[in-house]
Image (cartoon, rainbow, N blue to C red; front, side, top):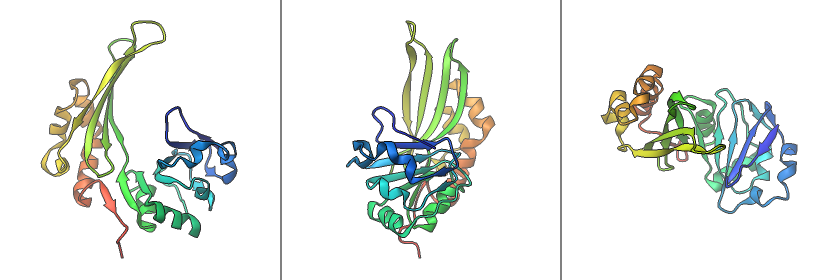
Length: 218
């Protein structure tokens, strides 16, 4: 299992194996990134199915856990569960996934993960356009549009990105076609064809939003 932390990133990514163990943090034990006071985000890739109990004691300032594996089975030790409650850790993932079930079981807040809705284009021609549905921690949403293409000199990357704010209740008051219509035309058809946006909006309507607070649940 590989645990990494990129330049400027507050947190870690874990991947390359099915079980995350305490020993996988060996390299980071004496590094300042492990206990960053700003609070760290820990992302478990789709391959990660289990986490050794007691692991999260090694990241005492954890504030967000992203569980990308739809069928991950993660059990917290009593100490880890107490840490998650004390830090009010936010759990992120897809609706109906292991992440949502985990948040419900341990009475933690759940927020839908940022999700790519569509991609279009060719990098070496006019660039690749990527449309992503993103969320702030309060549950409000926005569209991120990103274009990547070759820069004007070797080794450079051109393009650009722009964010589009969405109404707080867009999943109730707008259709997928209307949301897609706000995006670059190159991706309009693919957004509707893939159906990811429509599915997420339908589930959000049933769940009354993208942020679910399980902390007071009986």
